[in-house]
Image 1 (tube, each protein chain N blue to C red):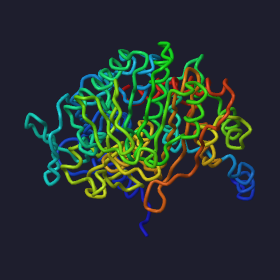
Image 2 (cartoon, helix red, strand yellow):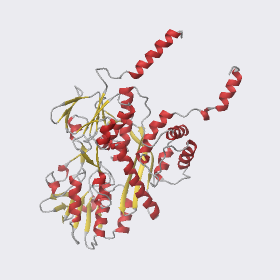
Image 3 (cartoon, each protein chain N blue to C red):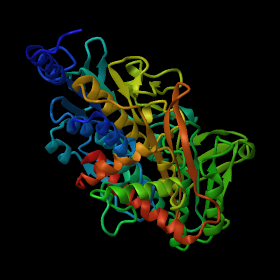
Image 4 (cartoon, rainbow over the protein chains, first blue to last red):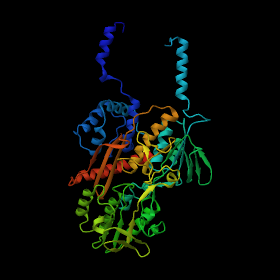
Length: 99
Length: 422
């Protein structure tokens, strides 16, 4: 991009909201999740979150954070997660197979 | 300012690469992590460091038992919901992943030489050591009680043969018999555990059709974890069977006579067909002998790292540590292990590190499909591990929610044991 003004405009357009999620952070934070979700099966009460689409993951976790979805454990876990942390987790789980 | 020529760039790149891959600890061969104790804390930290650093750190786990029965879910086994086998695990998967597992007791820690001395005398050197021995029972905290007495009046607060003895004695009871539990003083492993156990005693007696049997809980504490939920559940499912006495009621626990089967309090003497004596607790002997514990009998840690406050090369995790606002639980130990693993990866493998954060949930089964939970999240604050968020089940909740809680706990068990043992 040779035109510097266009370059800045483009950067502003993609802005912080599109900043690449920090997958390494996601991997660290995910350790809290796998204590319960690691061995989830299709029939388990605790769902599998490995391979979940990023958008779905973020919407669901934010719904727990906003107490729109009801589960004490998940509401408590989600309550302290910041948006960038949720994005990092979403990116990690979307790219990770169940162990 | 250095001019960025091609040559300089190559030098810089080379330097950063060598920094990246050089072991942080000087010495020959790979950096060495040694873990004492193969429970929820020790197993988790060994597996995570081994996996995170992809074999760049030698990880050795020292655990005398080849088969490890979990204390968590041992009450569910007592209630007849699960087999002993289903709560017993081995180290085969962890070993296949690359963790060196030594089935021998660790006798002592030579902190000056940075070596663990095994019972057989062999010395295992370490660059970093994780101490996760769990608890020891303070037998003399209940007058008359001893390790020998525990073969008659089991504590069953360490899993394995004690659990099996308690189950055997429970199943042999006849209608009209009395169970007496001496509950432990704070702090102890699994705060709701004694009361879940009382619930499981009652469940078994009820299922056997007992009409006259009684369960008496002699508590040195004026209050206990999930108290309102347990009292409500006991009244609902086992009316008239369970009598909980706080110190004002029994006036003080004077002691036990194991052979006579008698428990003495200021209020009365009780003749018990089954006595479950859960004394006060302290960090495992190896941690105390290495001077990692303070006057409380447990080990102070740095909440940012899980490092011992006594030795920066040593981490203490799980029930042996002083966990601030966290309870002593398998969930907590697993959570603390992940913080320790992250810090160890940074120090020995130059891996990226992050701020410490912790979580815990404790589920308790009161009766079939009636399960309650308490939990929270935690971070370093005010010099300890401090609670950030919390929740607890409410009285009078719908039956389907309580049933869901039980299923959730079963799913959690499957996940956490896979996280700990592979």
